[in-house]
Amino acid sequence: MIQYKRHGDYLIPDLALPEQEDYPIGKYGLLRKRYLKDHRRVIFINHLTAGTLHSHLADIDRQANDMMERLTRQMAEREGVTERLKAEDQMAWVGRMNGIRHQAEEVIYQELVYS
Picture 1: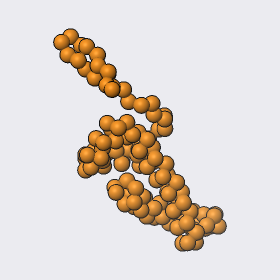
Picture 2: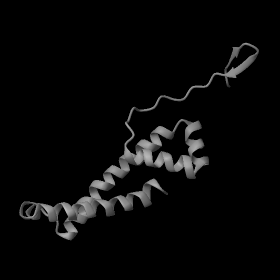
Picture 3: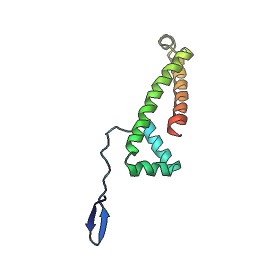
Picture 4: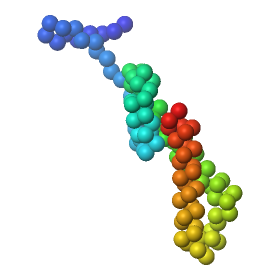
């Protein structure tokens, strides 16, 4: 049953959003929010009105960060980017790691953020 408050001549529903965890939303969560708001408006509004938007964004952000660490480590191992390479030729190591990070981010964007 919905409770109402009287404001002048009007009855206004007394609605409150449920308490949510205080997880700071990072890069991937914010990108997901913008994507939903701009391209999947119904999903965005559904999460917003149900009070699940923050937890959804926090979940996407956590998953994306975990995936980034895992993919970066796996790709570096597969391509032979090691600490030895870092010690011998730092610029080559940085260049290859940047390429690996960009590849991992593309996977994250396609699988989590923009899906």
